[in-house]
Image 1: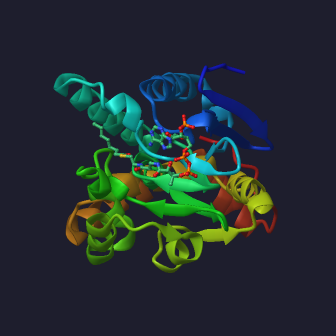
Image 2 (image 1 turned 45 degrees about the vertical axis):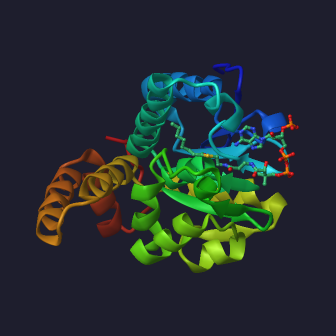
Length: 262
Ligand code: CO8
């Protein structure tokens, strides 16, 4: 298994688990972490597709990711600061574009850049200990790793504005209520729940999941008419796959499908 200084990888069933492993700084996104996330994506995009899903979590019991590294930020010149933000834009877009589903398993603080990393995942499961927020306004800052864009997409314009303008931290139950998290679990059940969902996904057609994901990413921001045209393209490309031929034949023959994955 590939090794990184600030990340650890492990495998459970069909899931690859990526742990941001800097618990002393509550897994804040130091430049070294962001560089490792890029290197991880380089590796995963070329060799990782044997896994049917990726789970991102944070090391320790306290934090998922406590945001950008504020200490490092203070010593950055303007060009470096901008490069840091743009690098995380690229990283979050690459996570969003992976061919397999990505679940954020939020085990503790998901603040600022941590909430933004979770928002770049397909969906979020939260432990009862999780909390979320965009506290940048407390630092005289605004979200810089995509929160202004993805938080309204997830929870709606008005709720996103309230959270960003107040910098308020919300608990897991409220994150569930506003649609930020899909599910809340006991801390010990968090990873098993994410792994179980990836096992469910592993039982269906891999090509269909990839086509559905790609189409839904491309639809973000399109109007209904253009998005429906995109859905028709996606449907037709799925219809012609070997997985679809097998899936439809298996239904007619009343047997379980054995998807070839193409
Ligand atoms: N950066 C660096 N170090 C951090 C961070 C962080 N974001 N968060 C925590 N740490 C460090 C602390 O400094 C402390 O280190 P040390 O032990 O050496 O003093 C250690 O982690 C433990 O933290 P605390 O002692 O503060 O733990 P508490 O349990 O008392 O508090 C909190 C936990 C509430 C999470 C608190 O640490 C906190 O408020 N952290 C900052 C959260 C925050 O504001 N995050 C948003 C940052 S801004 C951002 O993410 C914007 C993204 C876009 C940037 C664009 C760049 C161009």
